[in-house]
Amino acid sequence: MAAYSTAPHSTGPYSGAALAPPVLRVRDLRCEYPGEAGPVHALRGITLDIARSSFTAIMGPSGSGKTTLLHCAAGLQTPTSGTVELDGQDLHALDQTQLALLRRRRVGFVFQSFNLLPALSAVDNVELPLRLDSRRPRPARTTELLARVGLGNRGSHRPDQLSGGQRQRVAVARALITEPDVVFADEPTGALDLRSAREVLTLMRELADHGQTIIMVTHDPVAASYSDDVLFLADGRIVDRLHTPTAQQVAARMAVLVESAEQAANGPAAN
Image (cartoon, rainbow, N blue to C red):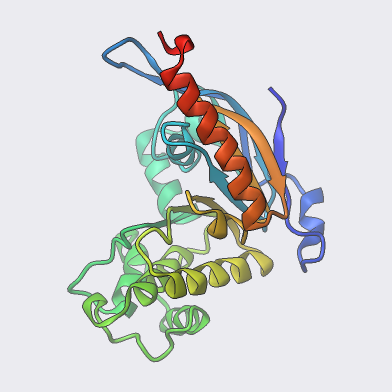
């Protein structure tokens, strides 16, 4: 299996980052779990490098393994075999306590459902990862992050006082508060209207242009077009890659993959 390396746009301020060691290294990653008809092979030998300061989108038909790949790369799920290294640290050499600390301090998460605590203000939601880690927040840093995501005057607002796009931007600020090596985003625009989705994607593009590594699972070709690279999964394998994508190119490739998946599921080979 070839290694798929992602790199930032060559025109960006961090274009030299592709020459540095990758921030994420995945080697021969396999993940199986029991199914009614036998073992389910969610990942079948994934190998890839993710460059620092890059924005990578992961796409594929339903059941292709994209969410499993994201969870294994982020240390949320233990694969059956293979290795994941985050900035040189082998995740599988860590015990559960060490892995929890790594996720808390070196990884940021953005989810489709925001996962904000409704009783807390935007400031308190952003600072929550630090408090859970028994670290004292720096108010100036929180203010800076909220301003960076366009919510400098919304710090005292609770989630129910914010729009969907604003809530997701709070979630992005929360993901950044620990200064993580990588931000993992799982369908971050899936619950947003078109305008809010565009605002969040523009923000994530700007973050990558200024040095933040982002890995995003999405089903939306428009969302994927904001990335530097799109990795296409099918049946637990990386089957294609698109650099500096357009929404039209992504949609065309996805249409082929979905059609192939449907033929495999309905044709004689499925029996």
